[in-house]
Image (tube, rainbow, N blue to C red):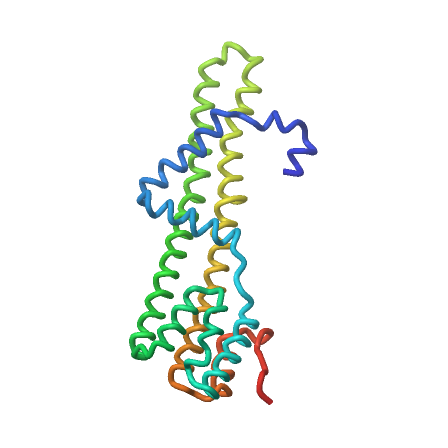
Length: 238
């Protein structure tokens, strides 16, 4: 974008038909590759990745250890108020099941199922974005070829060849920008967020099952640190 600004007017890089070919073509072919619900779900996942700030894994580990200590000392019912203050619906629901006396195997199956569904949604969203990144440059090339055919059909007017060539090449530019500055970065961000959220889910799963089994919080600290990166590991107990 800086190169465009330094090289001349932005208006010279705007061509509505070229934009429609690239964006419209990319969307149309993507809908052939995926169902409309999958594309809508990908948009939701993408917006969440852009707008939603994940909790700090280190802070969550400390919070989980506090809850585990309280549950170990005073029983599961003593953590009801703490559960109500939890922001994450998945963790809140999981601890609620534990307090309600749900079978540990059912809690384990529930948490694994929710995590699996989350990972599947994220993978599908990333797949839509990556496929769009593959399609956009191809649509840009198609638009360029269409423009060149039209240009070559008017060779009897040499003064129009230069501008027509510039417009034809714009579709290639749009395709490259859309793929490398929009779709691929979004896919990468979604994958990073997915990995971070999976780490949180592993922390939650480890902590909830430990609390259900009334395990020593010191053991839980070791288990949580096994999930956390070295720089984020916690030390609550001496």
